[in-house]
Amino acid sequence: VNLAAAGLRHLQRWRWFYVAVLAGHLAQETFPFSHWPMYASFGSTTSYVYVSDADGQPVPHLAVLRVGSPTLKKRLNREAEQARAEAARHGQAIGVAESLRRGAARLLPELAARIAPADRARLRGLRLVFVNVADRQRVLVRTPETLAELTLPPLAAPGP
Amino acid sequence: MSRARDLVPQVGFAAWETLCMRAGFAAVLWWEFPSLHQLPPAGAPLPFPHALAQWIDLTWALDAGAFAALRVALLAAAALYVAGVALPFAALTMLGCYMVAGTLRNSLGAIGHMHQLMTLVLLGQTLATWSWLVAHRSRTAWLGRAPAALHAHATRVTLQIIAASYVLSGITKLLTTDGEWLLQTRFAPVQLEKTRWQEFHNTLVMPETPLGDLVSRLCLEHGWVCVAFFGPGLLVELGAFAMLLGRVPALVAGGAIVLMHVLIALTMALDFLQNAAIVFLFAVNAPYWLTRRHVWRGWSAWKSMTRPV
Image (cartoon, rainbow over all chains, first blue to last red; front, side, top):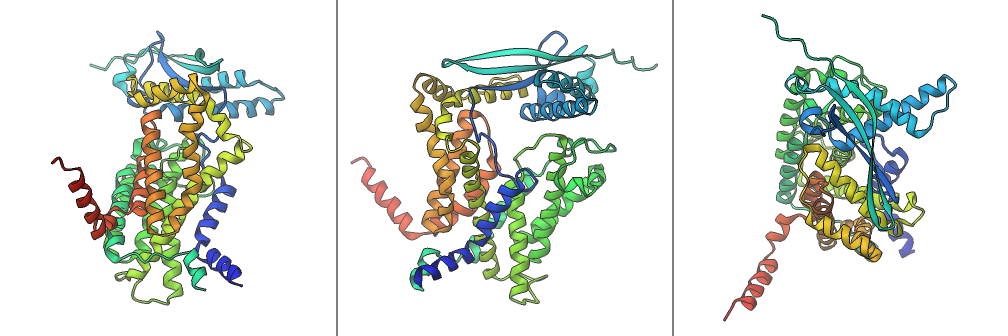
């Protein structure tokens, strides 16, 4: 009887705890709920992306693109998903590499639009570079690959 | 029944304790509120409408004037919240501000985890406040000063929301990896390398993470170091429910979570300062411990023991 009473009281007093665990697990990534999937698994490979100028020199993401590196990678993945879905609607089946390339081509113009005029004047183009990071027998190897390039037209000279 | 009660102690927080917590939490909410430039551009449809934005048009908030009004509403509500006046409406207003800004921020096509915990805490406090006032048939506390018992109740609910978030984080790790998360930590150096370079590309300055470099090197040389270093993090998350067992367990569990966040920041250059601050405010509850006489007596005794003769 005591155990049953203890159990009931426990459930009653901790109901917010159990509801919050269940809600987060069921809702997954639906703001403000989350099942907190960050670093929920580790693999022998991972990747990140960065943006460089036409000469291959990296562009500081926060100052120039006003977007953080992790967000940039998630954005690329979303664009790649959309590219894959779009191809499927046209009866095409594209692989991961091709969907990433198409996603990058969709993303670059939007990133270019975020650049302030002062920074934009210095840039002739943008490249989106995908870097694979792998554990090869306990040695870390980074392999970069340019996914897409965008040529930026020169800005019109200010009027008289 | 006394044994049953002992299993689930109900901490009675004093009014001044909850005042400190509210003041700290309000400061975190104000400090961490997103800026307009972190949200999608105004005047265009959302690129990837997320959660509430899939059903309700929230783009009105992207207008500079509307966003400024949102900030003013947050500030006014935060002031009432700290004062403990019109608590149900203050909590609801702050929840609304964070729901709008957080949903818009996550509608850029990338889910971030900066504002989830603080918004969940606001949701918990809003529901706790409204349900408490309805259940206690209090007519005066809706717009007047909230009683200390309501603040204590809201604090206990807050602790449950915080504990649930960390426990769920641990459960997700186990579910995602079929229970093999600890074994998979041998690949953690790959993630450390990725986060280091991601941080570099943010600013073009390589982050100084000597602890991260050391852990990464040792992990690559000896696989067991990964389990020894990252394993306790999983235990800390799964054991976060301990913060509901009383003041001392809350201090221990909360302190362990704050330490975990500090170590993550030092090794991975990833800071979740707002989450650590929330845990510090509500679970560690430093003002309570700093006012305990026996804590100061213990400190004096330790100082006298360690004083050079």
